[in-house]
Length: 443
Image (cartoon, rainbow, N blue to C red; front, side):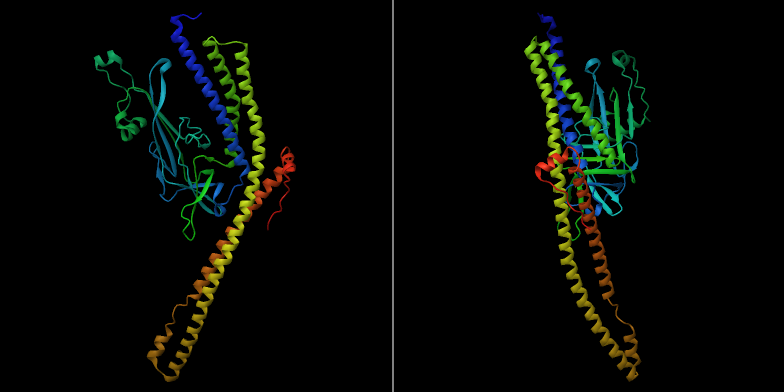
């Protein structure tokens, strides 16, 4: 029987048990979300910059500056195209000692991914809820992820003088030239005399770094003749940006998903047992109930896997339909645009042909009459514009053909993934049930 003196300890144990249960449930849910993200990366073909179309898209290339040009990271003073800097402070003592996120400085301008076909803008818009710099988690829907290597970290720990130190007039021994001290003085002067540990963590992407991104592609200004496309983070949809390649993204998302799924249920179950024991509720029925809940968590992994199989095939089929529709749109655009340009150039060419004929006749008349002044004026032929118009037509045709070729490449990549999946186990079982058949490539 518990005594009154045990109440504070029991309350602390119960609080920790509830925390373990909540943490286990969170990790499990997070693992399932990351698993869906992993499958989305696997089922989404990588688009070339010239062929990125609205909707879920992924791109890979090298990082380049956005419209704002190069940036300077606030802590490391590094020339970069993107930075993310966090300041933490420590407080408390003993079991109550903890690290607290003070503030974040992040570059607000879009960055650019460049490949052999062109460039595409990227807007991460990170708003983390976690201090883990190796896997920054934007927003509260737990579906988004940015994973960029940590480049710079610094910390400073002033000597805490205590009561007797203040009486003796002792000063903190932290050097004023310490990089963290300078950083805090420049950006958070109210913490310049903070008497405990401060930490700074900074990540940045430099010009030329390999970069992979998956997100929602949108047109910046649909009313423009050649609107630019941007891949951005949209609430409720997956977003993943990795300082590396698609293989890097799959590796990082994969092990994090597995770790969270495996660790979540045991943490929940142990917390459940500790809470039941602390409240003197532990019994065989309670133990069975906890075991069933944990088993259901693992059983849901199986349903998630089956659901991912079905959704994967549907996503692949939708990618093919979207790619086919994009090709049709570009072909129609080419037909309409090139027809108008051809008519315009033809009309202008005929006008210049008539003008040249008139000038030639006038020049012959001037020579026959021996009028030198008229001849001098006629020698200055007007600049013919038909040649430039034809060049414009040729440029438009080349641009259009590149876009069509990029869309066809994306279509064929989507078909390749789709045909590969429906021919492999266990996807072919679902494909047979849904009547899905291989799709032919386009030339």
